[in-house]
Image (tube, rainbow over all chains, first blue to last red; front, side, top):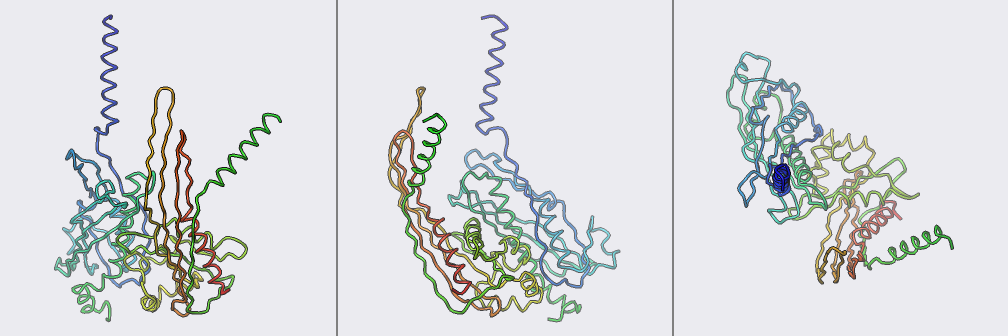
Length: 215
Length: 223
């Protein structure tokens, strides 16, 4: 065998091995970016001007699902953009005026604000059919909601959970199953938030004390 | 016989064989009426799937199939698309917030925004579909081989599908339930394989959909 033939053979072997590793899924974790549009809730607006601040942790939120066998990243679920989109649809439907805040530093100088709302994700869980042996994709999210007045004084701090599931379908990709479950979970949060906001005991008391609602 | 005619003949023969090779299905439909029903040509209905159960949820494709059956034909009833209704009525018909009983519906209709929207859509009846198709009693075995000279399968497989669905009809004028229709459809599918697997599929869910859809149409029209 000539030197050039040996080089060619070595290159082919390397290329073949690289392709084999890639095919075996050893290259990278799959990134699933959650996207979707959400309907605006059908409710009467509360007569409030609310400042909204999205922490960077929420805006860039991503969850990593690890492979049980290798311990390596298997799926990276990026949901920050859709979380912001969800609140951007939900809050203007619920409150008379919504003011987006870049930071919480100068909130006190904004005298037009009745309250400041800060949502955050505390926990995220993913259930894949391949792992749970159930024929559904499941997503469970625990949120922390904080409402304070413009002076930074606490009004309410409460936890909300959202759950979404989507049936596994034939020839469906994991990406599509996770997307569907996430959309259901985020709609679930929006529904509970819309219906339950005025009913949160501390919020209800504050709304009544300030004559924003009568009962 | 020329080549083109021969091809057509075999194509027709294969189609006929394929059509005749469907396994048998038994469908039973029960109707329970509690009140009178009527619908005019300006009014429409919406068919919604129940999705609050932990272990199953009514498939969107089944809801769509029943809606297609109800709206098809000369005697068809106009059906509002499920997703359009859910989005427009958001957040009142989500899995966690949807009214489970007519008393909850009565409560919901006290909200002006919800009642106005229903009125605007001209919806006369809400139909709740609840159920699922279960596959069980699988049996048989099949093995397939592939080699340089070709491949093939040999064996026999069988399974049973059982579809159970119930449709509850809510009248939006009286805010009461006017009745329900349930369907139980089951059938056994077979898959014999001598070189090529030949699926003899029992169209259980499709039969449940057609039976339920046609019965619903008659029920709502009051006939």
